[in-house]
Length: 172
Image (cartoon, rainbow, N blue to C red; front, top):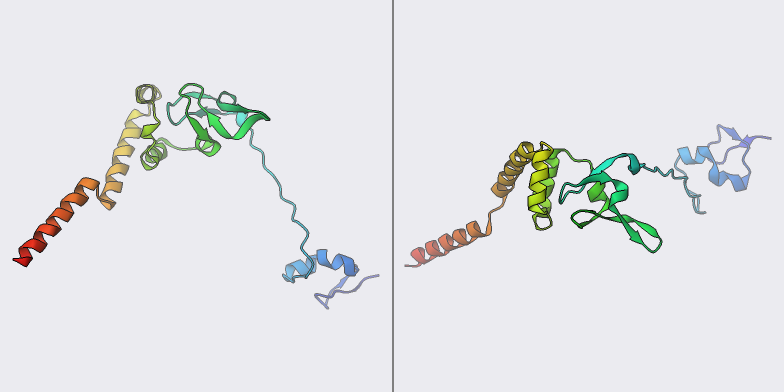
Protein backbone atom coordinates (compact mmCIF):
# COMPACT_ATOMS: atom_id res chain seq x y z
CA UNK A 1 0.00 0.00 0.00
CA UNK A 2 1.50 3.39 -1.00
CA UNK A 3 2.41 5.77 1.77
CA UNK A 4 3.64 9.35 1.91
CA UNK A 5 7.20 9.74 0.79
CA UNK A 6 9.61 10.90 3.51
CA UNK A 7 11.34 13.26 1.10
CA UNK A 8 8.34 14.77 -0.71
CA UNK A 9 5.08 14.65 1.29
CA UNK A 10 3.01 15.59 -1.75
CA UNK A 11 3.82 12.23 -3.36
CA UNK A 12 3.04 8.69 -2.36
CA UNK A 13 5.56 5.92 -2.79
CA UNK A 14 5.69 2.22 -2.11
CA UNK A 15 9.17 2.13 -0.60
CA UNK A 16 9.82 0.76 2.86
CA UNK A 17 12.48 2.31 5.10
CA UNK A 18 15.19 0.03 3.70
CA UNK A 19 14.48 1.04 0.12
CA UNK A 20 14.34 4.78 0.72
CA UNK A 21 18.07 5.08 0.20
CA UNK A 22 17.51 4.12 -3.45
CA UNK A 23 14.46 6.39 -3.88
CA UNK A 24 14.40 8.42 -7.10
CA UNK A 25 12.55 11.30 -5.39
CA UNK A 26 15.34 11.62 -2.83
CA UNK A 27 17.96 11.64 -5.57
CA UNK A 28 16.15 14.36 -7.55
CA UNK A 29 16.02 16.55 -4.43
CA UNK A 30 19.72 15.76 -3.86
CA UNK A 31 18.87 14.52 -0.38
CA UNK A 32 21.83 12.71 1.18
CA UNK A 33 21.62 9.74 3.50
CA UNK A 34 24.11 8.86 6.19
CA UNK A 35 24.45 5.41 4.71
CA UNK A 36 26.80 5.20 1.76
CA UNK A 37 25.36 5.60 -1.70
CA UNK A 38 25.21 2.46 -3.80
CA UNK A 39 27.90 2.50 -6.48
CA UNK A 40 26.64 3.89 -9.74
CA UNK A 41 26.78 1.58 -12.69
CA UNK A 42 29.52 2.70 -15.06
CA UNK A 43 29.50 1.69 -18.63
CA UNK A 44 32.84 0.76 -20.13
CA UNK A 45 33.50 1.50 -23.75
CA UNK A 46 35.86 -0.76 -25.62
CA UNK A 47 37.43 0.48 -28.80
CA UNK A 48 38.39 -2.00 -31.48
CA UNK A 49 41.85 -0.86 -32.53
CA UNK A 50 42.51 -3.92 -34.70
CA UNK A 51 40.85 -2.50 -37.81
CA UNK A 52 42.71 0.83 -37.80
CA UNK A 53 46.20 1.51 -39.14
CA UNK A 54 48.51 3.33 -36.71
CA UNK A 55 51.60 5.38 -37.39
CA UNK A 56 54.73 5.48 -35.23
CA UNK A 57 55.40 9.17 -34.47
CA UNK A 58 59.17 8.59 -34.43
CA UNK A 59 59.78 6.84 -37.77
CA UNK A 60 56.30 7.08 -39.41
CA UNK A 61 56.07 3.29 -39.77
CA UNK A 62 52.47 2.26 -40.48
CA UNK A 63 50.82 -0.93 -39.27
CA UNK A 64 47.95 -2.36 -37.27
CA UNK A 65 48.03 -2.30 -33.49
CA UNK A 66 49.20 -5.90 -33.20
CA UNK A 67 52.53 -4.94 -34.77
CA UNK A 68 53.17 -2.55 -31.88
CA UNK A 69 52.35 -4.94 -29.01
CA UNK A 70 54.90 -5.49 -26.24
CA UNK A 71 54.85 -8.99 -24.83
CA UNK A 72 54.81 -9.40 -21.06
CA UNK A 73 54.37 -12.41 -18.77
CA UNK A 74 50.58 -12.05 -18.73
CA UNK A 75 50.23 -11.65 -22.51
CA UNK A 76 50.58 -8.20 -24.06
CA UNK A 77 50.88 -4.81 -22.42
CA UNK A 78 47.87 -2.50 -22.58
CA UNK A 79 49.86 0.61 -21.67
CA UNK A 80 53.16 0.30 -23.50
CA UNK A 81 53.76 -0.18 -27.20
CA UNK A 82 56.93 -0.56 -29.25
CA UNK A 83 57.54 0.25 -32.89
CA UNK A 84 58.64 -2.90 -34.74
CA UNK A 85 60.90 -0.91 -37.04
CA UNK A 86 62.66 1.78 -35.00
CA UNK A 87 62.24 0.11 -31.59
CA UNK A 88 60.98 3.24 -29.83
CA UNK A 89 58.73 2.55 -26.85
CA UNK A 90 55.67 4.76 -26.37
CA UNK A 91 52.48 4.96 -24.38
CA UNK A 92 49.13 3.96 -25.87
CA UNK A 93 47.98 7.59 -25.91
CA UNK A 94 50.96 8.56 -28.04
CA UNK A 95 50.36 5.82 -30.59
CA UNK A 96 46.57 6.07 -30.79
CA UNK A 97 46.25 9.86 -30.71
CA UNK A 98 44.39 11.21 -33.74
CA UNK A 99 46.35 14.19 -35.07
CA UNK A 100 46.32 16.25 -38.22
CA UNK A 101 49.64 17.06 -39.90
CA UNK A 102 49.55 20.49 -38.27
CA UNK A 103 48.91 19.02 -34.82
CA UNK A 104 51.69 16.49 -35.38
CA UNK A 105 54.15 19.29 -36.26
CA UNK A 106 53.22 21.12 -33.05
CA UNK A 107 53.55 17.86 -31.08
CA UNK A 108 57.06 17.25 -32.48
CA UNK A 109 58.15 20.75 -31.51
CA UNK A 110 56.48 20.83 -28.09
CA UNK A 111 57.65 17.40 -26.92
CA UNK A 112 61.20 17.66 -28.22
CA UNK A 113 60.76 14.39 -30.09
CA UNK A 114 63.82 15.10 -32.26
CA UNK A 115 66.02 13.11 -29.87
CA UNK A 116 64.02 9.95 -30.60
CA UNK A 117 63.20 10.47 -34.28
CA UNK A 118 65.22 8.44 -36.80
CA UNK A 119 65.62 11.41 -39.14
CA UNK A 120 66.66 9.78 -42.44
CA UNK A 121 63.80 7.24 -42.43
CA UNK A 122 61.36 9.75 -40.99
CA UNK A 123 62.17 12.43 -43.58
CA UNK A 124 61.79 9.96 -46.48
CA UNK A 125 58.41 8.71 -45.23
CA UNK A 126 57.20 12.24 -44.54
CA UNK A 127 57.84 13.03 -48.20
CA UNK A 128 56.40 9.71 -49.46
CA UNK A 129 53.13 10.27 -47.57
CA UNK A 130 52.84 13.79 -49.03
CA UNK A 131 52.99 15.44 -45.62
CA UNK A 132 56.33 17.22 -45.96
CA UNK A 133 55.17 20.67 -47.10
CA UNK A 134 52.33 20.94 -44.59
CA UNK A 135 54.50 19.61 -41.76
CA UNK A 136 57.42 22.00 -42.30
CA UNK A 137 55.15 24.97 -42.89
CA UNK A 138 53.32 24.40 -39.61
CA UNK A 139 56.51 23.48 -37.73
CA UNK A 140 58.23 26.73 -38.72
CA UNK A 141 55.11 28.80 -37.94
CA UNK A 142 54.72 27.18 -34.52
CA UNK A 143 58.43 27.53 -33.77
CA UNK A 144 58.48 31.27 -34.53
CA UNK A 145 55.29 31.70 -32.51
CA UNK A 146 56.81 29.93 -29.51
CA UNK A 147 60.16 31.70 -29.76
CA UNK A 148 58.38 35.03 -29.93
CA UNK A 149 56.97 34.37 -26.46
CA UNK A 150 60.19 33.18 -24.86
CA UNK A 151 63.75 34.17 -25.50
CA UNK A 152 66.51 31.73 -26.34
CA UNK A 153 69.51 31.25 -24.10
CA UNK A 154 71.64 33.34 -26.45
CA UNK A 155 69.11 36.18 -26.35
CA UNK A 156 69.01 35.93 -22.53
CA UNK A 157 72.81 36.27 -22.28
CA UNK A 158 72.85 39.26 -24.63
CA UNK A 159 70.07 40.97 -22.67
CA UNK A 160 71.88 40.44 -19.35
CA UNK A 161 75.12 41.82 -20.81
CA UNK A 162 73.32 44.95 -22.06
CA UNK A 163 71.71 45.46 -18.63
CA UNK A 164 75.04 45.08 -16.88
CA UNK A 165 76.69 47.53 -19.31
CA UNK A 166 73.94 50.08 -18.70
CA UNK A 167 74.36 49.74 -14.92
CA UNK A 168 78.11 50.33 -15.23
CA UNK A 169 77.55 53.40 -17.42
CA UNK A 170 75.11 54.80 -14.87
CA UNK A 171 77.65 54.19 -12.11
CA UNK A 172 80.31 56.38 -13.75
